[in-house]
Length: 351
Image 1 (cartoon, rainbow, N blue to C red):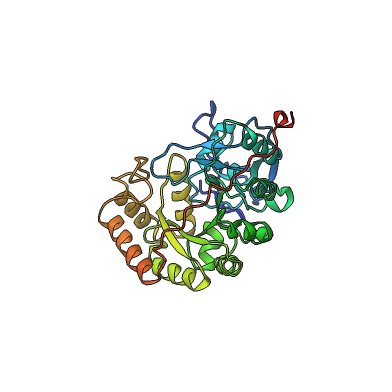
Image 2: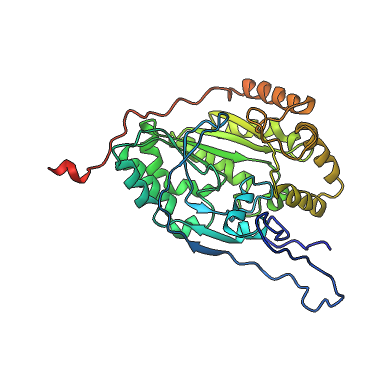
């Protein structure tokens, strides 16, 4: 039974998480009275976390620390590698991931406490390593802004990864931080086609709006690295050079790319999306992804999981290098300055 699309949502269904003890399956019994697709509303729960900074030991990720203000992401990007994390909450990586969200209202307070610890050693913190810190609910909760206020106060470096124009709201904080080499923004661009973006990443800012955001950040001397992510074989890889050209003209200083990977439940969700929105290309896309992933939908090995391997993956890498060199986007971003970090007053310092 094919699930109908939900307006403004990426997934079409709520498949069971891998930890669920029970499973359910849709069944067409011939009664279509209740078949009208109901509008799904976003629900937000509040989480009381004990700590807020996560440590990373992955050798192919360029940061040691990350911070995520939210669990789940309302942007609804069907390809999001973070979808399977919702299974840890007893929720589905499908529609639940983009409609049943968790916010951490004490994040800034917890961050302040951790930065004040005498054991803390400064290392750049990545915001948005898992889910987007500027997803739509940030307009209401403003947790990301509160975090930036703390980082600014402590002169602590950070990177921000987002595909939302909402980052412009915090230029008043980001510009002074950038002046002291304390912040860089990674702006993600998947496609330049508005009609494709509307179904692929339904609640993210439009491609043109993201390009305008790059320009705004550049005008305020905030360094921007464009992330062509993910590159989807057959579906978006033909746009690679055009995306880099548009980003360079908008003011991006450097560029990177990530080849799509489909871990765990994401593979089924993405294949269902393909069959719904681009049925004529669906099998071609899946076959090409498997060509780049040793015959599988996902290859979790360090060193290959972000770039893939094989003839097609090598061709994408070569095309990217040539275009980035031509557009002067191959420059490595300057390392952020950790020497300016200062801890706030600790109680014992008063004696």
